[in-house]
Length: 454
Image 1 (spheres, rainbow, N blue to C red):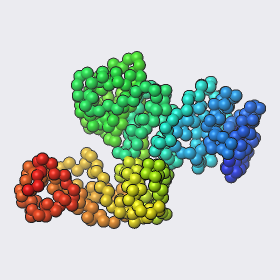
Image 2: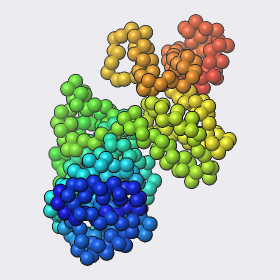
Image 3: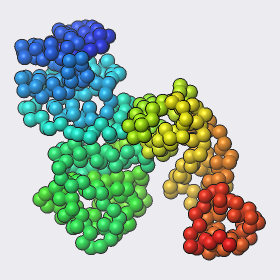
């Protein structure tokens, strides 16, 4: 590499490491812990590349980017930050940063990006957009490579007109990604419309959706669940898009390519929706983000409930080791419950075990087990439940938890089959009537008009 690099970071160790690495690579380096000093160097015309932290003792590196661009339009800036949220990535992209890396960063990776920045001529500057509000409430935080790659891709596609397909398991935050793409894009002042299946039942449903979402964003949530006719109407709608058309997005927890190959999803719709595919990783794919998310939700709970809670060391280890089949949504609901039920400021491991022990088992995988014997399907389901814990044992109480999961639907289905007649239901199940009544109470089975207590 050849050139002069300006390094701004309040961490002395990082300044030293970067100075040594860049110097060995052939660069001249000026390093400082002051944003004011950095800006003076930039104004004086020094440097061919800037590597800057975001939070500095005397200012914010991201907020300084527009000024750097105005003073030196051709000067590339690489942003490094410990604020590992989607907001940081988006703000860096909007402010025309050459690149963005989360801390802790991989030094060889940063060196490659620095070499590329010194070789690439910067684009003409664009006016910096107005700052956004409300982004800090988005629980899209994560320092793992999978999440950082997602953040960078979101920032790149945000202001394009390409359709976006957002995939991932239930509870990973697909809807939040769709909302973030809209809220931080040039369309943010326009409508954000989430289409429901009912919106596509009538012939004029698609045209009404287009009118509601005009110029904004239109999202088809869990598009794989739509009936064939609804899919066909979406295809015809997408073929008729004209001026002021909304940005099209769709979410799916199913593998649409596999469903298409199996004839359960329209091929023409698949290719119309898949301009850009964003995969939101499960918590099992980003285990190191679990403590970060836990801290985020506990802090949010403190604001919501006015109660300060923290996880003990053992509790934190258990939270990190758990598989979270319900992903971020399950983690958030679990911590909300612990915020309310815990009587001490520090949440103990036993309290976490008690809450996780009452969690429902994950849904069995779709598309497998059809025609199998019941025992084979149950075995596959249970094996998957154990496998989800990544080599760790599930929380104590598996036997009773599994019995409860089987008993509840069995009794509900039997009650439906007997029209709510508990005497007939008890006879069908081979248990006495008092036992049935006790089970209905214990399992909290709702008694509808078809199921009247006798």
